[in-house]
Structure formats: structure tokens, C-alpha cells
Length: 358
Image (cartoon, rainbow, N blue to C red; front, side, top):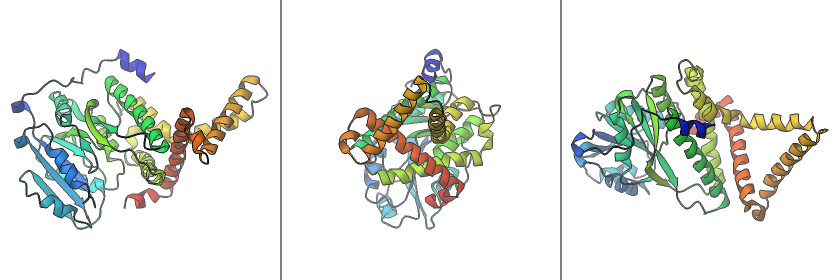
């Protein structure tokens, strides 16, 4: 349905990357919150300095969240007039650091990114081109996962991420996306509203605050950042559990997101961010209710199909041969995400999500 609507809808608030002369480009500040990234920070800085944007109109601001290694020393050793670093000697949160950095910035546009990813040199120009339209509050770029063939788990994550990007592209064509890619997005500084320090999903709350104030948030698939997908299910479990707990936290921090009279993209927000939270419960209800209807042939077939599907996923935990089957690989990744969703809910209701970030 979403793809059909995207085909039929033309979002007049979107500008198709019109070329801007250097003299017309707005000032940009790149903001990066870092902690203990000594081993990768030089590569990140090189990637940012290589962006195709007038040097006199762009600056970089790092905020170190109580780094305990040589991250700050590496940044300051560059001795550049366009690179600044705030060295916080207390551990807070990424959201608190964002509030701190943005309050100090004077730039028209803020380019937000993380320490790990590298950027296509044209990514900043692509994002900035959309701000010709004063209604646009933020624009998300596309995160491209490299080397997805590393292992079966990372391949499943890559398939999930490609599906996620397809949804975002369709949502952008219809109206706004209910979240941005934290590794590569830009926003109008004047449209930013400070977020609670305990916010887990800054890349959802920041754009949704804009949507609540009638701004548009777009997705531009031409603005690329590059990353390597996780090869470690344990690490991905921690990250996804925190993210999914953060979705529940959003409703606690901004109940107005559930008000269709205030949230202009209420349908997209519910279908994209909320339905995934209750999907494990719906699947369990579907299996149990189906069990009571097996006397009819159709429901017997659907029940047996579910049992086979779940059985193959369980077997794939013990057999790499089975896991290599394409459908099993996707099903296994899906069920892993469902498990993380349950863990995220438990983390939220027991308030463990706060300790995960702290």
C-alpha cells in the first residue's frame, strides 16, 4: 500500500537536488558526538574534510563524552581553525551532548553524523539542496552497508536494512519520514528543539519534533554514508534492544505523537515505528488462534506452515547448512529481530534501558 501511494503522490515540498552555486550555499556545522574512538577518528576527519563543500562555509564540532583514550588529543593535534572539540570530563549521554553542541552553533544548517561511517564526497551538497524550501526541517541520507557477504547474520541485517530504506523512500515521497539515519542527515538549526538528555532515539525524536511543528522531513538516497554491518549477534542484540526500548520511550517522552490531530504523519508513524513493537505479540496471537481452527483444511495448512517455519528457524541455530538457505536466512533474521523486540519491551518496562545508555 505504501509503495502504491508513493507512486501516486508527488511531495511538492521536496526539491530534486537542484544545483546550488557556492555563493548561495548556507553555512554548515558538522556535529559529531564521540567517546573512545581513538582508533578510527583520523579516518572520520579525513572523510569529513574531503566533502565537496566550500571550506569557508563549513566547520566541524566534536563533543567528547568523557573519552578515556586519546580521542581528544588526536582531534586537537590537527590544529585546524575549522575543527573544534568540546572535552566533557563527565559521562552524560549522546542527547545531552547534542543539546550542548547545537546551543553553541551559529551555522544555518547542521550536518549530523557518527564517528564510524565514511561519506560520499557529494553527500553534504545533496542534503543541503533541499533546504531551498523553507518548509523542509531535515533531510536524511542513505546508509550503505558494505561487504554484506561476511556471514549469514550480517546478510540478514543487510536485507532488513534494504527493506527499511525502501520504506523511507516511499514515506518521503508521500509526506515525511518518521526518522532519519543518524549517521548521515542534515537539519535546519532554527528548527531544532532541545530533547531530553535521557533520549535514546535522537534520530527519531528530533525529526518528529519538527513534524509536530509542521516541518517536513525528507529522505535523499543520493546522500551516501558507508558502514560495515555487524558480524556479532551479541553486539547487535545490545544495539537493537536499546533501539527498540527507545521506541517505547518515545511514546513516554512525546505522547502527542499518538495524536492524529497533531501528528501530520500519524499513519506512517504508527505503521513504521509502533506496529513493529507489537509484532511479536501479534505473531503469538496468530499461532494460538490458528491452533483452535485446525479442524478446517485451510487453517490446518496455515498452522502447519507456521510450525514448519518456526522449526526451520530453530534448526538453523544448530545447522549452518540450513541457515544458508535464502528464505531461512531471512526468516532467521526476522525472528531474531522479534526476539530483540521483546527484549526491548522488557528493558523499557523494567527501566533497564536507562542503564544501557548510561
